[in-house]
Length: 116
Length: 116
Image (tube, rainbow over all chains, first blue to last red; front, top):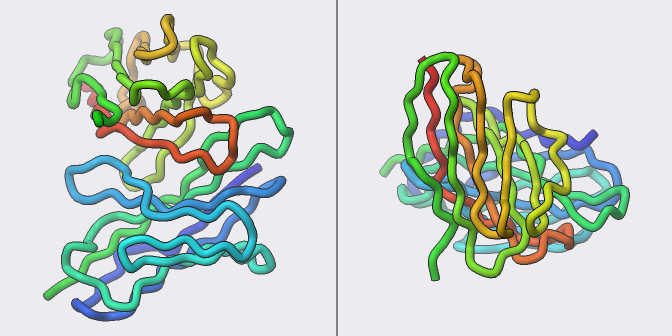
């Protein structure tokens, strides 16, 4: 079955530090990959996505590259801000049986804490 | 435009009681999903609707859980004879079509269910 593994948190960084949150996956077929973010007290929001191998998703200074050879989709940001403090979820969707629909499989989430 | 809304935002009930959780998807979205998020975990898929029909209910944990979407818009998740283990945040998401594996799902703020 499908699964997503994320690095455990919390990840604690100082403002302007470089961020990497690792994500690897197992899936049948050709999944699409997503990063969702959950800010304190808010719902899940799509941060970025990539739908095929070697695609790079990017948004708000975050980026992630779909690496089929390593089954990875690591999230990076060059310089984090206090406002980036949130829980980040890696997720995949696939439709291995060509049933015409797909659902999301999420990792457990990684909390990021950025201090001034 | 309006996003996905869920009511109530919080629900406290006693073991053995019946509860209903409501989801209003984004207007025009034909696909609707229910997920459950336990503390410290990522969301887990429960059920998927395409229009009025449940296309996949394989994530429902047992027959105490049931969901409907009679007119293809609002959906209600129903839980009978609640148990303490049902305590979680119940998330609803909708997407435009649901038929493409790269389709973006938009999440509501969730209903936090606490079973005493």
